[in-house]
Image 1 (cartoon, each protein chain N blue to C red):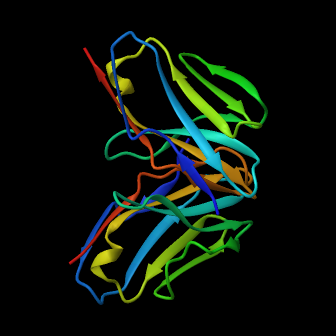
Image 2 (image 1 turned 120 degrees about the vertical axis):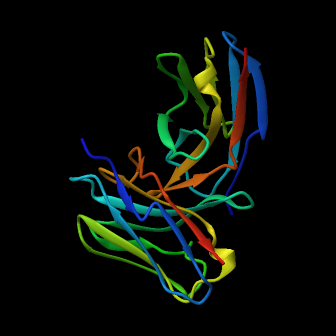
Length: 113
Length: 108
């Protein structure tokens, strides 16, 4: 079975550029989560969707971040414009329903120069 | 607010038993989860406790006491491959709030 698929695996770009991270959840999973992981702040929930609808975006750091889920099999997290402090590993996770175990993708390692 | 506390590092020898504690303060609580993360890898689900008591899955067990806002992960018969970070996470209204993680180092 295919797990959660994220792309790209690595991204290095200059500050000010737009960055788009992509996620394909496990088929049949109704909940999708975006996390950011850094040494300083640990693993933080940015936003989560249930049945393609954003439920809680209180973790999104600022207006430069946006996330969409146009259908059940695809989600994007966009940063525009990017800043060096956005450098982190971004994980996408999905679960059959909220409050059920989450399955994580391998993450996107983002470096903003 | 919500907070979780767990030790930052634990060291143990191969074959031993280790317990990783987690205390939490949260405005809402549905259960306590544990995740494992190897260096550079994705977090993977280990266990979930919604009710008080012990849940056992092979070499790993997890315990919850809701009245004490406390849980732990017990790893038995430690193997070198168990060296990783372990996160407790509170399940609250559909989302997970993660602790800072405990780095477990297993030595020969």
